Image (cartoon, rainbow, N blue to C red; front, side):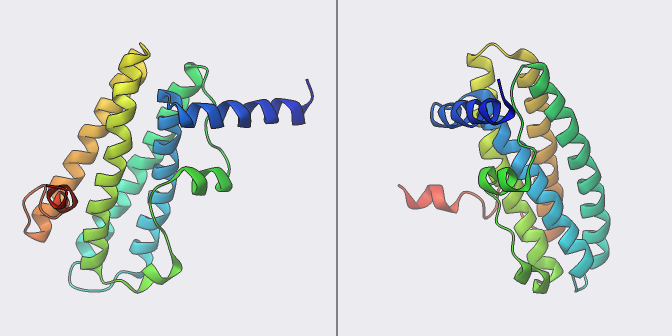
Length: 180
């Protein structure tokens, strides 16, 4: 098969997998979210201002390093499962559910910290779905990795919320309450 034919088959399978969805497709979203989140955190480290900036720079710099490692390790798990991973900027932008923008550089450090809590929580939506799909598809290695990632995200949410003086889930379940 030609390169074009191979890529066309990949895109076709990816579209099908994202509509079903599969654990691999859902994990592609997780990879894209990690990649975009790294960039958002780096933007905050460069531009945040306010009394919370020293905490933000240390916390976000450590988170970036962990997310780089998580991305690389999770990509390897997917490849070991014979899944295709997103590798281009266009794919990361298409599959990520995190919003990035140049105007965010003008946020205060506190606004960045609140946004990071929400971004970790958004990532968890995809992680919990992928865990269930991996279990259903009998992919225990992927499932175990994602459970660990969920735990790390939950820890980051708790730590950020504590710094902000909030309970761990404060401000994150408001949309759920509106549905009642």
